[in-house]
Structure formats: structure tokens, C-alpha cells
Image (tube, rainbow, N blue to C red; front, side, top):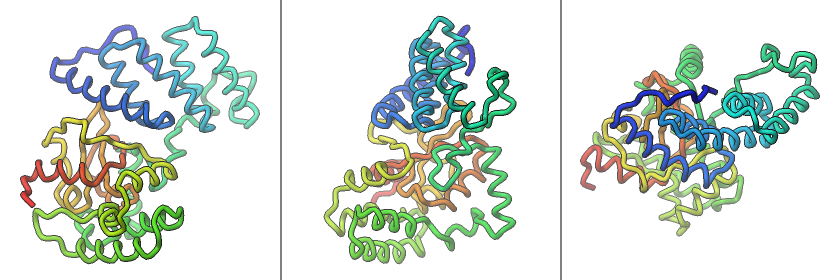
Length: 316
């Protein structure tokens, strides 16, 4: 964590963008109090505009969330960072002592050298490196993609012929009894048929949207069911003014063809909303093309449709 000796110099335009990001991620973190990656983004935004009190407040919440999730080394880093900025905080000192004790019991921290981070796994993002990852980095994910390509993994050019993650999403919906098997099966068949050969400037069909239409389910009910059972953050796109140039950071094969929507940037991180966060190959392809860290979000298909229609001037 950086010391808040002074706020970094930002232009008025960049400051306005950061304040928009703060407004959005304050909503996200209030709705998802254990969404650590969104809190990381919010903490960085507060630091960039010099909001010291808010910065320390979200850092404390982030440390507590990591501790509750059992990610004690990450929690320790947050608490130590707070104490560098605000050393007179007995509550944080106590919280730091608790996580250090847990790390010692787990054999990850030696009692005699608690200030030495050399024996601790500080890469907390490794704990969420599966297909439901909220955050991937340009360095780690691009290396993983290159390795996958050597094993017959996805490339941008062959995406139309590969799995789009809808089978995985369907499995989640049925296994957790969010939607009945017959409704999911019928919707899945229709989505596969529609998305198989998309015409240019045509948006793919969303499985969530088709299930809502076919099975008389509320979209909010489906999204809530996924969020309750899986490790995703939600992006309320309807409340955000999205720059079309950010959307176009990805090609149409991913935005229109995979319903993936870059909607904001903060420092070296791009936020991408998805109608299907189980599209692992789409995520791989996006990271191949972006030399940024990527934070993934689940969003309402209708909100993604609206932004894509406006960006690509699609009438129907």
C-alpha cells in the first residue's frame, strides 16, 4: 500500500473519470461487501484523488474482508499499510496481531521474524485464479494463455468455433436448482443455434436473457442466483456513462460475438462486464489482446445490449 504523503498529479479530465469510477464502485462494494477486487480498485481511486480518510476506510474494510475469507497474508499487508499511514490505531494493531497469529499457526509466518515477508505467499490473487476469477493480470494471464495455446488452447481467430461457456453456465443454473432442467435445455439449444453463425454487426444471444424470456424468470432473479453462489462482482451498467472508445478496445468478435463489454479503466486495470462470466476462452482471448490487468464483472444482458447497440449503431 502506498503512503498518502500527497495525492498524485492528475488532469481535470482524469480526475472526473476517477470520481465517476469511485461513484460506481462505492455502489458495487456496498452491495458486495466481500468483493475484494472492487475494493482494491476503489482504494486505488481514493489514493489517486487524495481522499485520505476514504482510502484508509476502504483499506480497513479490505483487510477485514481478506481476514474473513481466510486470506491472512493479504489481510496482513492491508493492516500494515494502514499503520504506515495512521500508526496510532489500536484496533488495526489488534487486527494485525490476530492475522499474524493465524499465519504462525499455519506455518506461513515465523514468530521470531513476523516482519519478514519472505516466507509468506503474498500473491493473494492466486487464490482466485480459476475460471471464475475476478481479476487477472497482464503478466500472469498472458503467460497462461501462451501455455494454453501450446496445449491447443484458444486464439482470437478460432473463437467462433470454440466453447462459449454457455454449457458451463447452464450446468451452474441446473445444479444449484436456480432453473429447471427442461427450461435450461430448451434455451441452451436455441442459443447454440442462433450463435453458431452470426452475421456481421449482429449481437450474440444471451442464455440468461433467453431463459428469462422462455421460462418466465425475472432476469434479476437469475443474476442474483449466480452472484449468491459464485465469486463474481456485479456491474450496474445502467448507472454508468460508458466511453465508446473503451468498448472498442476489444474486437467485435468478443464484444458482439461474446457479449463482453469493457466499460471503464483505472490505472493499469480494465473493467469488463460479461453476460456469461463462465466464458473462459473469451476471457483468455481478451487478455491476449489487452496489455492491462482485467477485472471481470457480471452484468445484466439488457444493459450490455443497450451499450453495444449505441456503440455500434445497431438499430434492431
